[in-house]
Image 1 (cartoon, helix red, strand yellow):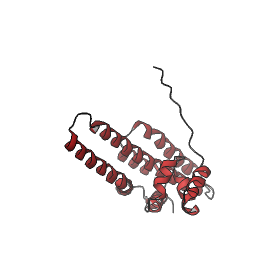
Image 2: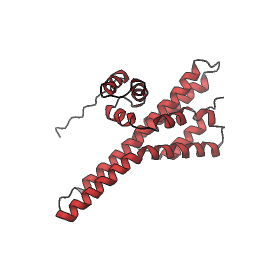
Image 3: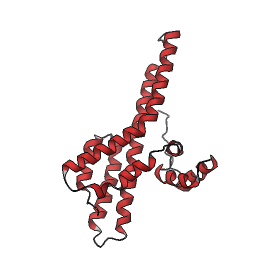
Image 4: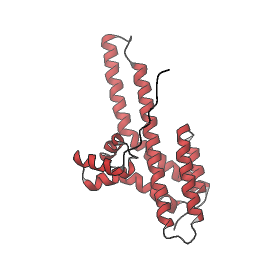
Length: 195
């Protein structure tokens, strides 16, 4: 094969912020979005219009203060985080539904052959999977930031360092499409609680 894979490094948050500001986004909002977008300008544009972004980020950042070391609490908190991810996917799901309706109308008018239904379905699956992975990475980054901030004032850094390492490990495992609920519950059980 003559195909060559080119990996581009993510954009610096400052570059994302400046582009969003140039596109008319408020600077304060652009800074929050730039830190959460992971260097992806398209993701940053999507987050800039997301009114519930602050709520989702707060849910991830406050997770260590809501945990009590029990499986029941960990499972409940993970269920809430996953519901927030589902909520974030609602605009994308609505766009997908509109595209399917448009395709159905075209099929009804012109017939099925060469309609692109399979390509559309595959693209929708990829986009939804990517959105969920991006949301998880964003949440894990916010969670790790909470523990890193706590490291600055902690007298016992070992559990906090272990927490950041566990969060980073899960971020790397996301590439292999693990069962996100099980992985998040296992992570929540390993995380130290914060007062």
